[in-house]
Image 1 (cartoon, rainbow, N blue to C red):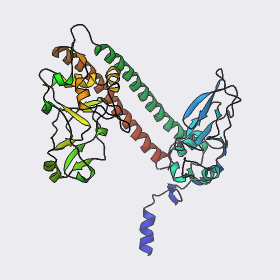
Image 2: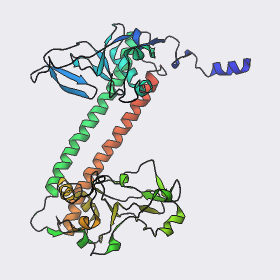
Image 3: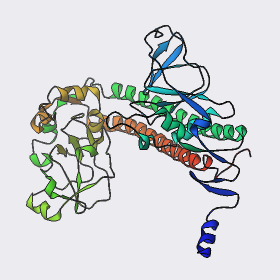
Image 4: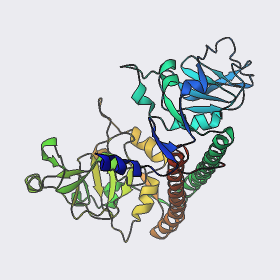
Length: 400
């Protein structure tokens, strides 16, 4: 027993202590949130709302308008009372909040921004007090325990470090948004039909051959397993890109022959006939599966690659003009979809093969740049998660 206790003691690094909220530095404290701030209720905005107001009116989803008066004008942590309860907000300028959004009055010896990041680390759904619309109680919030550095200076240093990472993430998101707008403008210009472009249909591009323009297979639940032949579903078809999800489905090997399934090939143009939105398309990349099939609501299109640039078609099938044509041909009540026949007969215009290649190359390079930016954004977010885990528990110390 003594050896067991000694072993447990050695699991705690020197200078640290085990507490109700985990292992934290010995000079840190554990206190209820209510010791650092007081939760306050928002109020109706009806009497203060104004198109000429200077102060944002905040709800659980963010800014919903402006007010001619403010409800509070000091740094504050805000959290949803009802509805969206898992997205804390931070404000350091005057604001008004509606009744569904709590705000807080932070005690002067604590950093509001540090407390905000603590709020961001809490799984608020674990404290939901309603069976319907998610709800939080002020007392429940105030009774939760959090770790606290001993000085306001250390709290502020932690908050500043995390704020710097937030600023980096925000700048990256704005850059991606800017690049997307540029890409959209380029698509509108490059894919707009011009003189010399010819009218065609998918049936024409596949020489009206069913083996080149066919639907996937009717695969029912009793044919699906967690191993076998990979099934691509409608959710794997994004607008212009393939979406490889973690929840993968597989066809039982015996069912493949029984259903006479069609195998997909790398480079196949896949078009989803089911909303939302119907008509979205992607090219099947290498996904590390030896055999792949797809569902009946996905059309497999194989125009001759020496005459038609499939990437160009995917880009064309990502435009608002294409989706407008699709929407005019969808049917159904419960599930909106377009028939393969209607899909195959939609008319659109394309340039010669050489111009298709040039247009595709320009737009593909834009896609690649945005993908690289998004990858970097994902890394920044992972870095922030790691920083929060280290800084908010004192595993890594700043200014102490």
